[in-house]
Image (tube, helix red, strand yellow):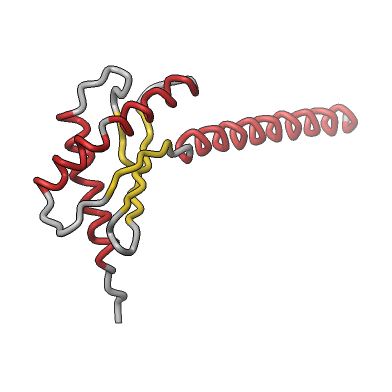
Amino acid sequence: MPREFTRAERVSDAVQQELAVLIRDEVRDPRVGMVSVTDVDVSRDLAYAKIHVTFVGDRDQEEIDQAVKALNGAAGYLRKLLAASIKLRITPKLTFIYDESGRRGQHLSALIDYAMSTQDADQKADTEVADNKGH
C-alpha cells in the first residue's frame, strides 16, 4: 500500500509553489534577482518553515549573503501574502537559507570531467608508448 503524505509534506509543497510565485511577483529588492525555491522544510506543528533557495547566475558569496538577508527581511511580508493565498490556521514563520547543492553539483561534475579527460590522455599516452615498442 502506498505511503500517504503527511500534512507537513503537503503544506511544504503548497508553500514552495506559492512562494516561488510570490517572490517572483512581489519582491522588488534588486539584491534578490532571479530566485529558485529548491525545497521547503516545514516543522511538524507547521509553525516554522526553512525555505532553501538558489540564485540564477554567477554570484560571489557576498552577493548571495545580501540576497538571503533581503529575503529574510521580506519574510514577514511574504508570510502575510502566503497567509492570504493558502488557507491555514497557522502560517509558518519563514526563514530563508541558501542551498549550495547546485553549486556543489557543478563543482563535482567539473572534477569528474577533469578526471575523465586526464584518464583519456593517460590511456592515449600508454597506447602510443606500446605502439612505439612494437615497431
